View 1 (cartoon, rainbow, N blue to C red):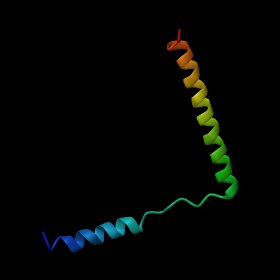
View 2: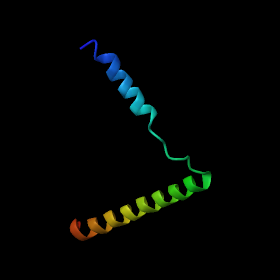
View 3: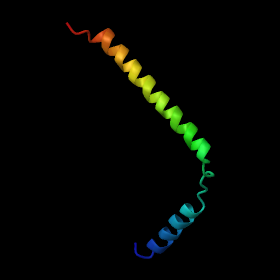
View 4: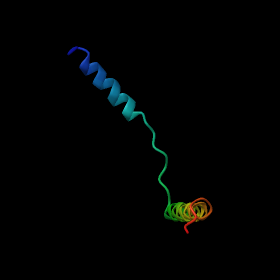
Amino acid sequence: LRTELPGFRKDIKEAMGSTVLPPGKSAEERKERTSKLRQAVETDKDIEEIGRRLFFREG
């Protein structure tokens, strides 16, 4: 087992080193993504509120 560990570590290092990350986002792309996320969260809140009114009527 000890003789296999250095080779295993080398395989892991090679696999991690060959991973290519996507290019970084510009400030405008980040801002656009953030606004889309906020809009999606608001839509989800609206849907949840409508669902509560329809299915969990109080009174």
